[in-house]
Amino acid sequence: MTRITGTNLNTVASSKITTGQTICAAAGTPVQLSSSIDGLTHGIYITAKDSNTYFIGVSSGVTSSTGFTVKANEPAFLPIKDGSAVYVVTASGVDKAISWIAY
Image (tube, rainbow, N blue to C red):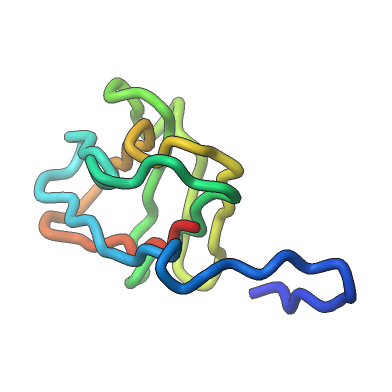
């Protein structure tokens, strides 16, 4: 994880921060990250909870060949205002969770 330092950091009210986990129930089947993350001011950090590899995209058609790769200990940041547009898929395994924090 990258440590962020500096004097020009914007603070975010805790009421504007949302966290969650999304379960990929079946390999190869994209799931919406969350249907209720919209109106964001910065974006979403996404990280894998286990050693599985995940692929993220902004369409329900995301696949392991078209998505952005996310692995454990390698979080991705999406500067996006509507988090409900984000979908995630895993190439293997079932009931695998991906964690996220949106603000």
